[in-house]
Image (cartoon, rainbow, N blue to C red; front, side, top):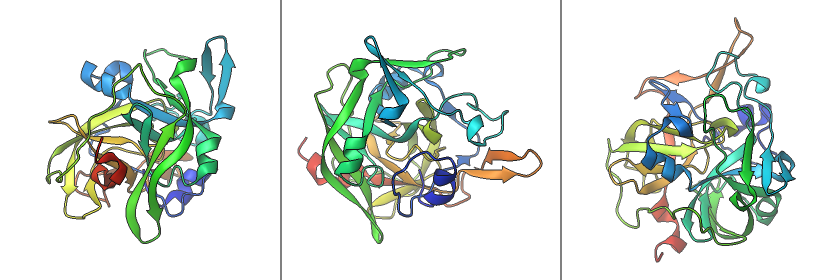
Amino acid sequence: MKISLAIFCMSLSLSSLSFASVKPKVIYGEDNRVDLYETQAIYAELAMSTAAMISGSNLDLETGRYVISGSTLESRGICTEERFADQITPAVCSGFLVGEDLLVTAGHCVTNQSDCDSYRWVFDFATTSANQQDYQVPVNSVYECKEIVERAFGLGVNDDYSLIRLDRKVKDRRVLSFRKSGKISINAELLVIGHPTGLPVKIADGAYVRDASPSAYFTTNLDTFAGNSGSAVFNVDTLKVEGILVRGAQDYAYDGDKNCKVPNVCEMNECDGEDVTRITNIRALKNL
């Protein structure tokens, strides 16, 4: 995601959270985002450990399942011909599983216990076929946030993460492997899995580390948007989580001719890049 949150996050009303200085994201080179049914099996398995942060008002409980609702991308002002324009956008942030009942997201996504209590973490929010019209998940795919275990975020603080404990153990999907020491190298190939602009889960590769020198984060050219905040960023070679997507360049620009918004597009080495908090910064994970 990004940290100039205001304009896009507020205009699209993705959340009522206060994201103090958080910006959205952008496309670098080609748009590499794909739906779950379009990706390779190993990435699909990693996506199963990704959760969407969704308000309870967007979840309608029926017999043994939740029906997920939300405004489409198009209804939020994005041009009709843009990718995923007809898909719903209820997710405000992303998160990923690092322990049986532990989930990591961005620090600006879960800022206090009120945020923790107000949202649900929904696994399996995904497009699984080309003609999918609705989104439903089993009851056991939806979790509450029990408590914030560790958090860092604020003006003048480069860290941006929240480690939260879910209301019960997650037993039907893998706990993701993550880096515990050292640093990723510049030009290392990357993959991100999350919920750009609140959409069903998207997988995007074809990116790399542009700057590995900052101590608390590294900069990439991942194709990410508001809603991707909290997404796991993987090293393609190891498939281990290297960090948490937290901020980047502005996502969308207004097209006056079309009277709607289109994604910003930058060359691979242009624009500000997308910043990723190093997962090694989370102290509570060092002994897991």
